[in-house]
Image (spheres, rainbow, N blue to C red):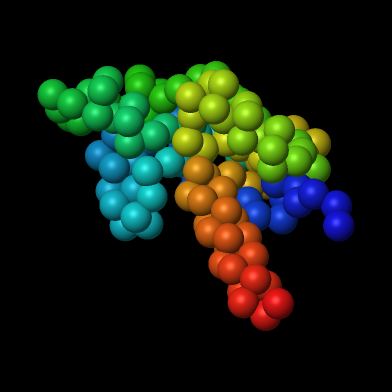
Amino acid sequence: MSPLSVREIMDRDFLKIERSDTLKEAASRMLEAESDFLVVVLDERAIGFLSAHDIITKSFDSLEGKRVADVMSKEIISVDGSASIDKTVNLMMEKHIHHILVMEGGDVIGVLYDLDIIKLVGEKTLFRAKEAREI
């Protein structure tokens, strides 16, 4: 069996926000979706991301008058959809990140969250336990 690719477990239903939107709009969108991560776009192209951590550490005093562009992370760390889970996990640990953009042809096709990896590990553990009981 070949190793899983990131494309197989990534979240295709990720949230986007424009760099010109306000931080209040961003925070509201995060709360509504129960997410802590937004892909920042300009003309539908990813130009960065905004995490709850960015909002808390860079604008804790007030969201008033601040735009996404003021606090977003501009370094895009990404992997190709065909990347292995192992390679991607190693990159996420090396960069100390909890989310990674999955790209193909310059477009974001999904986001891999650390929780996606935890779910995968949990599913593998349950599958192995079930196999062991059947032996």
